[in-house]
Amino acid sequence: SQQGEEDPQALSIQEGENATMNCSYKTSINNLQWYRQNSGRGLVHLILIRSNEREKHSGRLRVTLDTSKKSSSLLITASRAADTASYFCAFEGGATNKLIFGTGTLLAVQP
Amino acid sequence: EPEVTQTPSHQVTQMGQEVILRCVPISNHLYFYWYRQILGQKVEFLVSFYNNEISEKSEIFDDQFSVERPDGSNFTLKIRSTKLEDSAMYFCATQKRTGGAEKLFFGSGTQLSVL
Image 1 (cartoon, chains in turn blue, purple):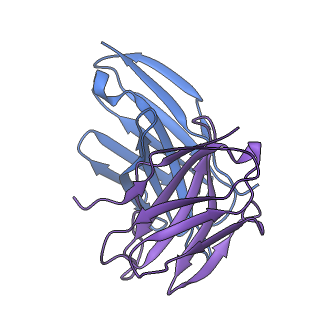
Image 2 (cartoon, chains in turn cyan, brown):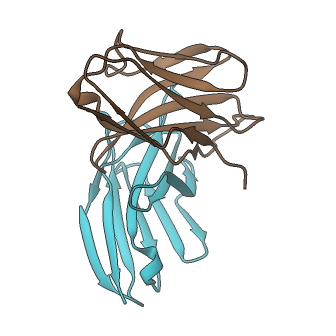
């Protein structure tokens, strides 16, 4: 399957703690993106990292990419209750322009 | 920020009926996509559309599915004869694609329930 795998499937932390989500994929990629989805809503783009980049930051978000291991991680620092959502990685690879999504991580941040 | 608009937000239909899901893309975007998500689980690619034709489709997108942009504005997904397993949240997404890697903008989805 082309689909990415994420772990953990679910993560529960306390406000103020950091949350780390991991994504693995099987194909070569052009870029990898992370999206957030609040329950029952559409997906919202968070951050994009290109295949020639290793790390990227945006506010409290830090994304790493290891193309040799075909994996990426999303770190949310100093989490807030409002960060509670599902987080999906998505990658674009080869000649295709479609994004293939990972299985998602459900993050619950307890106040 | 510009938005992708989807209608209706909820659609209930009987098995075997035709449904049309509508999407209004962001005005200067060139690439359009349909994805579906069953029960808040994985987000599955259905089809991509560019320059008034399908550029790629998945194995899910069989002969019962079709897409079109009839008036240069709305982008529609039609399911000709719905099955129970078509019940899902359907998302439209659009992309500018002026060159290089770009994000997708998603609509808020249409929840389709087939009874």
